[in-house]
Image (cartoon, rainbow, N blue to C red; front, side):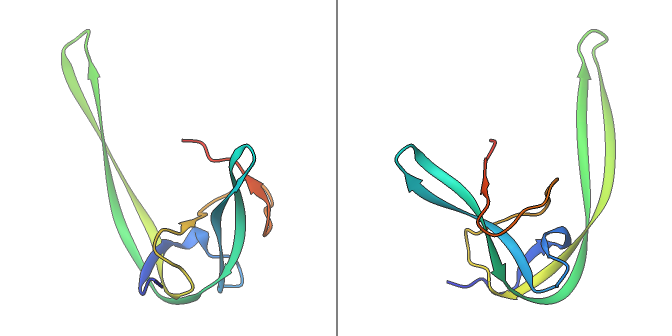
Amino acid sequence: MAAEGFLIQDSAILPDGQSVYVIEARENLWGKEYYIRLRSVRAGRKEHQLNAIQEINQDINQGINRYANQFSYQFMTVIEDGLYYGDVVVTGWDRDIMDGDRVEIFK
C-alpha cells in the first residue's frame, strides 16, 4: 500500500529532487543481506519541525540532576508517491553510495 503524505527528512532527498535511497533485505545462505535501492518519488510540500531533546544526566556522587535542553529544526518534505509503509529511507551517508550497494545495519 502506497503511503500518502509520508513525511521524510530533506537530507534523504537526492539533488534531483525526485529520488531517495531505501534499504531492502534479501535472504542468502548466511542470513539476511541489506542493500540500497534508488526509488523515484513525487515530493510535495515542505515543512519544518522543532525538536526538543531533553537529556537528563544524574550526578550520583553529588545527588543532583542536571538538565540540558537542546533544540533543533528538522526540515521535512511530504512524499506523495513512491514510498510504502515499512520502507527504510536512508537519511544520510558518509561516502558515495549507489543503487545496489550492500550495506551493514548496526543496531
